[in-house]
Image 1 (cartoon, protein in one colour):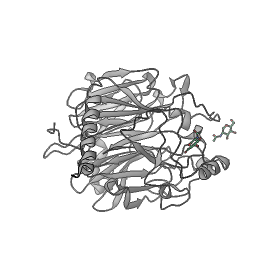
Image 2 (tube, helix red, strand yellow; image 1 turned 90 degrees about the vertical axis):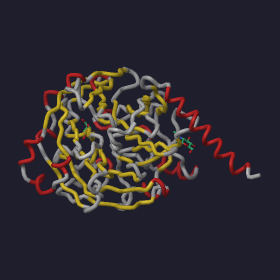
Image 3 (cartoon, helix red, strand yellow; image 1 turned 90 degrees about the horizontal axis):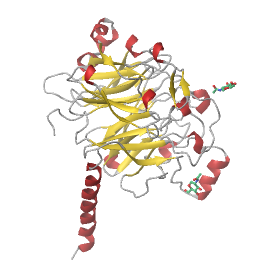
Image 4 (cartoon, protein in one colour; image 1 turned 180 degrees about the vertical axis):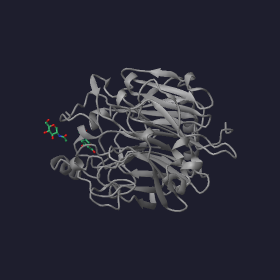
Length: 411
Ligand SMILES: *[C@@H]1O[C@H](CO)[C@@H](O)[C@H](O)[C@H]1NC(C)=O
Ligand SMILES: *[C@@H]1O[C@H](CO)[C@@H](O)[C@H](O)[C@H]1NC(C)=O
């Protein structure tokens, strides 16, 4: 009786066990999914044909970034660095046997990805999923509107992943905090203490800074400091034969885990830079203090990475992971140790061309997307459609840790 009810449950359980064991054996980063180009789950052949015809879909211009894992789906972003990107937030099943060029479904749906409707998503790079399953989406890439035609102000959109991505809040940033033309909300960490805050990097070349958003007050403010500027001496490094002459501002961001009765520490780094800077969340959370300039004396330089990096990530044991763009590698430093103890833990000239962003799932797996991002935001050559060349990879490493959102003591 009721076997048809129980069977799916058993299968799900078997699947979860199988899946967990599989990643448990992954002792160094391994490619789990890869793409040479992105295709979508189009609603119909007609709509696909129309998108190709009117150039709203140019597969050579679509980049994969910002993976996040929640339950049985992988969420990715596709910022509109170039024209022809019809969907900016999408997802695909975590357990699908398909690992190469898996088609991406718009998330939450096509309607939420329509261009020129300022109420829906326009160009997303960074997201974060909090412990309750709310996705904090930075619809804030406004750095090259001349190319992608976006005229909507940047915003933070909260989607409930437990309710198919229903939008639960949208906060639009005023121009003083993030420029509608030239702003670039890049990466975000969530601090679920004292009313819940989001700390966001604005990678704008015009007005870079760290934006604090208070969930309780539905307000935001911005901290600007020289440590969030590029370090000119770092520019000019080579990636895959191209010289990186651009000057990138504050970009990677990481938050220390929760430790009882201690403020957390925010770590950040400029894209063109090697310094890892730290600031206490006591200062970030204090709007009055952060609009003066006395707080700047609390900015600490923790150390210099082996090279410039894009994304950074901290686990609940205080291990900071960062990509090293100039060395096709990943570095690791524990915040309780001197920065001299940092080390390169993995290097791969082929699979780590532009290690971009990290995330963790609830099973102790660390994910890293490498995506050759410079080809999309730097190169001014028209990109060719190269269906044989793998450009985007999501790599996985089993660490057995949790994300920074959990307590230091959680095992
Ligand atoms: C994209 O997917 C559609 C099916 O949804 C398929 O017909 C089309 O050939 C694909 N395009 C490319 C470039 O792979
Ligand atoms: C790309 O380069 C061409 C020729 O050097 C220049 O005319 C054009 O403005 C550039 N486009 C962008 C988007 O920078």
